[in-house]
Image 1 (cartoon, rainbow over the protein chains, first blue to last red):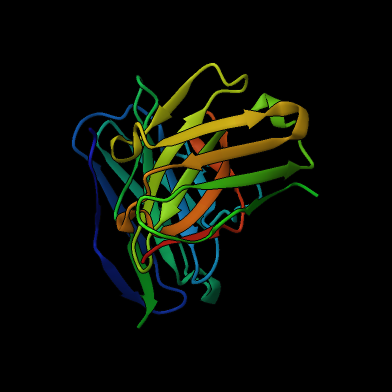
Image 2 (cartoon, rainbow over the protein chains, first blue to last red):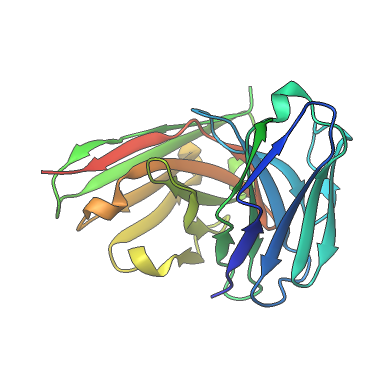
Length: 109
Length: 117
């Protein structure tokens, strides 16, 4: 089973700052890596799929990069609505099972 | 409107059963893989199961294999999760999600399942 490790667990930043979130896989996941945002009491929302493609309606300040085992979600300039928990998720090639990282909380400093 | 609406959650005793439903609307349900993902109170996300468009392939996380069954009825635009032999550790909000390639691009609002005596 592929394990995803996200770091840091908590990121304390101010609006307007740049956020860099990391997701490391225990083995190569090709490009099947997605990022989600979740706010309290809400369902997750897809931000990035296939490592670097923004989902429909996602602002350009969100970007994803990486391949193999190391992936990054970058928020170029934090807006007040961006303070939330972020999860990475991978799909193994076969069988097509998923795993999620444990999450990174982006909080207001 | 494109949406997923879960139902069927509730309080159940350990060892009991529950069937969750997810009603899809606003898109061609039969064209998509579908998934169930759960979230225990205060915890992260955990993938539970996937099902192919025609129901011919199903995959489960190890912890629910043999206890949970994912199914779908494309004529009714509905996804299901039959949960048997429930345990306290199955307590969670269960989300259904439309699956695009290797990610979930549309989520329901979730339904809470509580396993307790």
